[in-house]
Length: 174
Image (cartoon, rainbow, N blue to C red; front, top):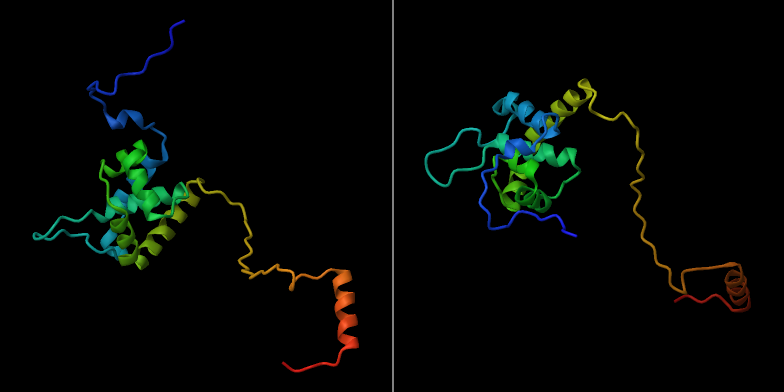
């Protein structure tokens, strides 16, 4: 019985990344939406490129990457960097640019207010296109510090013994 054979890794092929992305894929929506935004009016830095120094990544490309991460629940800059290297959708969206995690994190840090404004616009767009879930989720943000050693946990028998010892002994100050 012959098994299916894959293509040799050394085989050279002419492949268009555009053919790998379906026409109804969410990355196409992100691409069109960000291209329509006026990033300078939203307050993004580096919307105009200077002549000297290394050329920066365009703010539109970085915003597309953040929107992709938002829709796919990827918040970490390191994970977004990994997606740029291995995910075909991100290759298409970023025109095969691969920013480092530090560049991604610095973009977030330097454009904090502008990103908040851009996300508000994006969420209202998604709601208007009925692409946003309307579920209500409650999360308890309580943080407790727990220690469960033998001195700190009590059951009924331990409490009775403890109270009996306290009543038999005089109370002493440490």
